Length: 53
Image 1 (cartoon, rainbow, N blue to C red):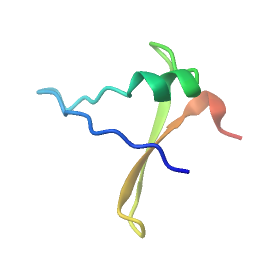
Image 2 (cartoon, one colour):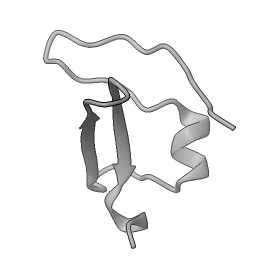
Image 3 (cartoon, one colour):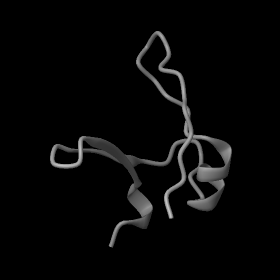
């Protein structure tokens, strides 16, 4: 099941990961995330670096 939210891009091209998603993946300030563009699906994925296998 997908979870989605709409977020605004700031002047510095930053986005805020919604609180419920941050909490689910235990993403904290200073953590690293991987940003992946899937050309086939035309989506951007944000993957917590500490959760990768």
